[in-house]
Image (cartoon, rainbow over all chains, first blue to last red; front, side, top):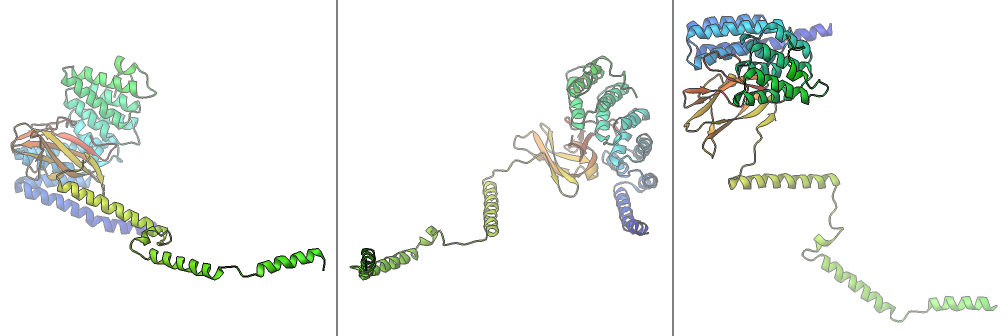
Length: 217
Length: 189
């Protein structure tokens, strides 16, 4: 009985805060977008909120489009695509995924990373945060690493138990190799090989010979 | 009376004899004590008197701490008055779940650089960067909430550039990719 009362009180206390946050986002959108654009964008934002998806990334995309002076159709399309990406990310990462993970996952999915790869990452690190692995995966794809190679490299590193700082070092090494003219695919493989050599308890050769052998999505 | 008893009487009698000059010696001792007491009350004698100050240990510790704090504050003020700035960390945790992040961007020839991102509504006028003394380096410090942030730099109000040192967003939604920053995980990128 006490729990029920506490829950009821908590919901009463939290509900106005959530509503005011939503109103604040809508006010920002109405202040920056033309009325004919603000209305459909707000509809998308409200629909996302109804599905308990994070709405801040959607508002950010709309405001970014306005600042970049993109067309109304492009802005609305970008917001809709991102909302779909957030929903797909939650399907792949599960209902307990945090907003930052959904945000990063949506970007990766929009870049062509399959949902299976995200689900595999979640299985590889079921309790820890996936924000850094997803950001590294997105960076690989953005720098020209084929989606399959990028997914395999990040998944293999995560399965090997590499901590976030090691993943970030792998990203930096891969970036440096690409800047020196190496092919993005080979650069990511070398980055993974270096990481596995420095990660205790992993086979030293696995990274360079066949990183896909056990790391495939 | 035997010989032993007589010897005892002689000794007892010797002790009872008045000492020659005893009165003068006592007067001299009292006078010396008075003179030393007068010296102690003189200027500066209090600082040398080991019994001159009694204090609770906690009060003494508080006094020492206050002296250190005032000294540090005074030193910082003196450095600031001479134009010397204490080094700033690139990333420093501040209360209420946010972190102060210093953005650094190299833009040779730029007359104006600003920072846009999720955290300032992508407003090019919201967060201008300050030009460092070297001329090509621009910096800004921004408190950011924990989470994933997309951002870019705007040069002279026109060119949007990603941060060359940061991870890139996977999709160029509006023509150019943004940079990504994670705050509150193991470390900021």
